[in-house]
Image (cartoon, one colour):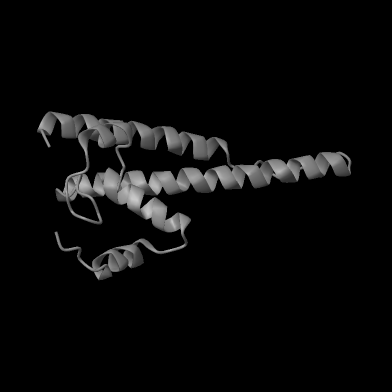
Length: 133
């Protein structure tokens, strides 16, 4: 990967990290309010639950961003964690914290849909009889 492209992606990841940190901070639940009727308290409880769900998602993405930045520091950024080939530049542009190339991501998603772990899918593929041509 070209050094200038690498720096553009690093800046993009840093910006995404700052945005997510701000979102997480704003979603922190406010101190519990005991005023209001049962409906008000139920609505407040639902708001808090939604904030936690959103916060978990943002924290997961934040973790992926941190991992991508760490890979950059170690010189491992842009390599698929499964096949070790280069992740497509267009994919990194759209999703700078992508862990897998498009082929491996699609394979992992298909495996997840069928209830098979991705490592099992690789094992099954290697167990298929080779067709003679």
